[in-house]
Image (cartoon, rainbow, N blue to C red; front, side, top):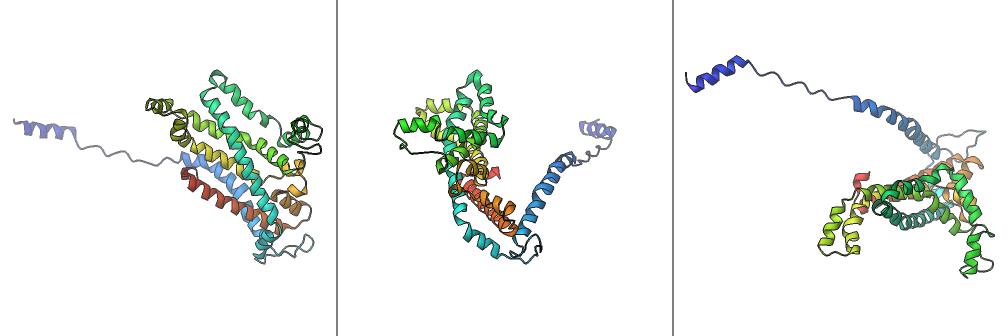
Length: 303
């Protein structure tokens, strides 16, 4: 018997090859997504649709006479025209607070990730410790710290940084300080998460190539931490732009942000179409700015 005949007989004894198992796509992932998707639909999509519809109601309506859908797109123009200053002030305050948060958070996150050693967990607890109290209590604490008789104002007056009648409370400085403090953890935590993932061997390789500390940071550390920096910037800027507590407690009507205007239109003046129009304009402005910023930063994968 030749080798070929033996191979044919052996193949015939094994029988036909079994059919490959059918590859059924697992559906467990879709079921796991269902609660989150329902939550988003009920508490985000539907309220957003209702908000947009309210912004197009007849501006002459009221709670007594009711509101009719008249597709009044002019509500948006009136909102921009009438409340232009609070809009711009909100974006300015949020931008300055975000910049200050970056300056404070980056060295802190860097120290925790690379220098803290066994104190790392303790320092992380300190970062999130403000969340153990409410947002309102933290802001009220700053009202006492920045008061005219507080130690901060007294120290600045002693250093001749503030005049004898100078003050911090009820100024833009107080509002921006409150925004920076309240949203600082949202900047620190994403930065720390990105910095901790950096392979230290890359930095050592840079030093082996005679790169100094600044060059290693600029060429290695900063680019690799960009996802955390962009995420922290968004998590800080977006809620800060819509905040109204800090301006309400630490400022005056001259420092009011668009959140204060929306609050007053909804709850005091009961002008729902104008309040909804302001809310939609703020949302669209933030979305456009976020898309532009993420594209410029080269981190589209965050979207």
